[in-house]
Picture 1 (cartoon, one colour):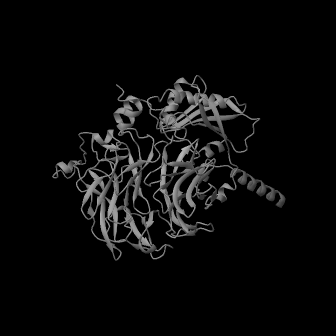
Picture 2 (tube, one colour; picture 1 turned 135 degrees about the vertical axis):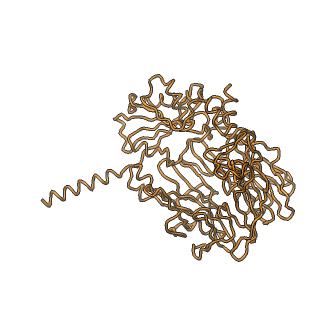
Picture 3 (cartoon, one colour; picture 1 turned 90 degrees about the horizontal axis):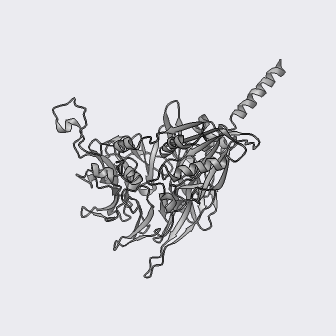
Length: 590
């Protein structure tokens, strides 16, 4: 009897181990979600966040950690339930952060956390001035009449909203007459004095809604001015324009100037060189084209002379960071051939400046995401690939060598059989070469046949790279026994500006033919079950699925579309981003 019980137990434990040797939805939600925060002033430590979502409580626990830039064991800076965000530097080597809407000031090791008094309840994006005497924050201010009670104060029970033009809503955020403004306050003895609104009376937002953040406002290194981003448009003008600008507010004179006047596309993410002599930002040239080539523009703060340092480079920038102690070199990330890599651009600023020089630093089957900070020759970044969620890595900027710094999820991945990711290049119907990722199930057996999914990316100009998504996760799909075919079809960055732009005004044309080419090419392999193929995707990917359902000629057995455009007429009449539909469709449907 004991032998039988022992055998049963062994059998059960073996099955349990086998059940855990591939990614599952439940396991995916147990992964720690790592994001970089900042590097300490002495360059010795990097601070980062680990978030753990809880399905049962529908809440996320998020705490700060730090680890030596040279490696070693991570150390918890905060602990316990709740979500902590917004970690930034403060005077005297301290740090600030937000928890449940309250801002705290703490020592660098997490001790002696105290509330920052004097801030409004909804204060956000708090940042100390470099000299530690002031701080800026954002706060909602009532500017325009929208609610029924704004127009008729005596109608106390009115809950109507009154709109006479666009923009009534942006995504899930209704226009209620409140705008996010930037405030400046003095700081002393742990308290912020009442701040003053540097955007008083303006019906504009900073940060930009709905997806702007602390990157939209910064201090100048001398603590005398504030740089901020806003789109000076409201109503219908807001809905048809992508023209954001970079503004400088001078505290002493109470004057504001537009630093990007005459530049008509998105101008965002301002950042100063360490000596304060030069300002850089990301810039798109054409108004209305939200996926235009993203360049790095620099401005000499003495004479306001500008230079586009990536103008001649055939790519689009994702993010950037000034090199430490330099006003002539910037590191940036950009997509290239189905990955996101680290680059550097040098732009000599002597009397006879040379053309900017660009070099690619990293190279491999991974994505370099956030540039967290620099310590000597080491750039701390976050890195992903299709089989691994984000972790911190260190890149040697002199030779591109990259090494893992954090290993938050190693214990989970160590027990998994990972899918195999292959890259192939196929010939498109118009004679181009297209990259296609093929993700094979764990334990793949080439003598068997597998159901196959054609994955259609959204955007439509979003990259399909070595990302690790907690929504559309290739590892999870493949672990369910599917082959996943993921093409870098027309419209994606990383294959030149022309390829990136080619999808505009051609949603149902060449990009759809690219998808059919990809599935047809991969289906020549004997292990693809041609009787069990499906097309899946969201947003423009959802549109692609609907389009493929009409033209696939019996290639697919099923289709899964999530929030895809299915009627461009009703879409044009309901979208709040009119600039998008006008540019990509060539105008109104009529």
